[in-house]
Length: 122
Image 1 (tube, rainbow, N blue to C red):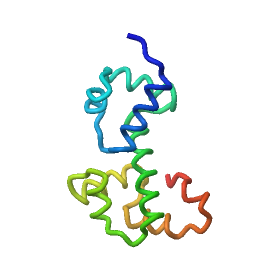
Image 2 (image 1 turned 180 degrees about the horizontal axis):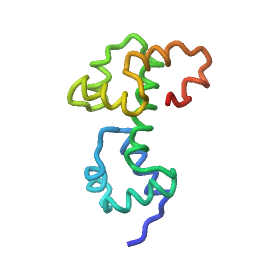
Image 3 (image 1 turned 90 degrees about the horizontal axis):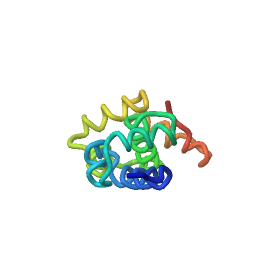
């Protein structure tokens, strides 16, 4: 079966923005395509792999949350994003950004210009 890569990528993005913890297998089942098709689509449109793209989506959600609610608890954010525990959330943030959630919050909240809040932190 043939797919429009741009349309499929849009669907992948929507699903990951709703739940950045969604695995490749879960995503493939919900979109009714193979894991390989998702991997190829993400690679062709981003130049990177699925895991890296999912981490980018997660970091954008985390940064947006910190920008809007800089005083909110890390535990609240971890639950909102579907993590089983704050420690698993912290590991994911550290892997994606190189900083713990508290450091990332300080970085995001400390930036004055709004345009810079969306710059990558890694």
